[in-house]
Image (cartoon, rainbow, N blue to C red):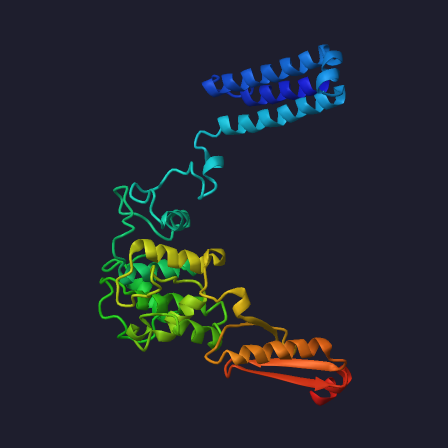
Length: 350
């Protein structure tokens, strides 16, 4: 009991009386909490015999005091945190104060908050972010390059010129005439190509089987420019774009600032992605025995191929020899080779 009281007293002394400035209202609350804790533990000690009958043993009461001490210290931590950084640490917290007055309740709120904290996006300077405003080509290039880890000084004549040159160096832009006006709104198909080029510097491209599955399910795929088709399919396969309510991509529609924030944040955080994929019972998993890679095979144009893969997987389980299954993603072909034993396989692969 004495040890508990001493610990509480020391905590109060450190929090209040060791300060050079006068005690504030917060300090008074801390002292009150400490006094309440000491009194509650003292009462428990004096009337321990009565409490044993109704609420447990003396040891249990001391443990409850220790628990209350921990809770009090937690409360002290909040009281001495005037900016509520503990509460604001989670961007999803309902107590998070919006950085911009026009994103409260907007679907892109979480993405915008996180990118602002990472200094990848910023508002207009008047308290607005403009999530429904159109995003310009130069603005999206800057967002993408900063998400890639680049920070450059803005140009004196035209602020985006250093970013444009860096984008060309990083091959985010390949064709010198890809954009004739960087100040115009960026289209969704253009944004898809830029962000996918950035992603493919770090991640593997989706296998053709996945993009074939997606191509058959995009209502307006035919409206996508030929030079953007592959990148649009990749963006769905990787979960960067999700389309609108009816599944359309709307390739010629200008990208909004909220949409651009979501795209860049999904590039940075894979947990925020939602790849287009079939239900679990509509696909099979193939583990390439040779290279150890795992592939999810989606329903192709000929569903019977799925049946063949399932038969192969079952055959491998029943085989008494050494089965070797390989998958050629480029040709969408799967092979099953049976050897008498592992030694026979190793001899044949020398």
